[in-house]
Every structure is written in structure tokens, then in C-alpha cells.
Image (cartoon, rainbow, N blue to C red; front, side, top):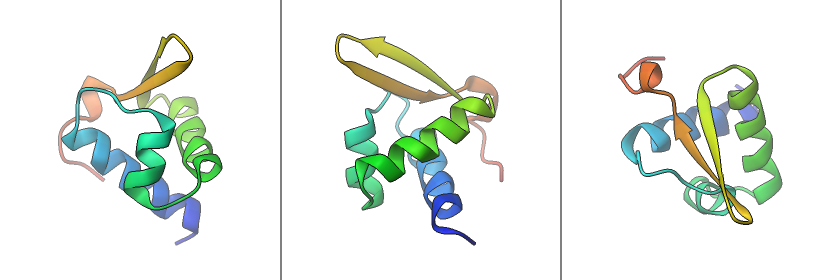
Length: 73
């Protein structure tokens, strides 16, 4: 498993547990990777239609879409 795939898996699990929405910086801190790596994982998830992104001021909050909130892999 590549590093980015591992981060994607971790991000999905974090967003599944924390439904209030998280920023790139918060996700990077929780996954122990750089903001760039976290952003790359989020771009892939967004492109796959797995997450929603909500801009608030300078930040973007990331949420797992409802259909992916159930435990699945």
C-alpha cells in the first residue's frame, strides 16, 4: 500500500468518526503527515465523489458524504 493510499484510508476513517467537518491542517495533524500530503489525499477523495468541501472564509471544511458514513472499505 502506498503512503497516499494509507493516508486516504486514515482520512476516511477520521471523517467517518468526526462529522463536524475538518480542515486540511486538522487532518494533517491527526494523520501525522504534511499539509501537502493531506491535501493530495483530499483532492483524490473529492475527485472520487467521496467527500464534500464547504468553504468558510479562508478555510475549507471537509466532510464524508452521507452515503459513505457507514463502515465500508
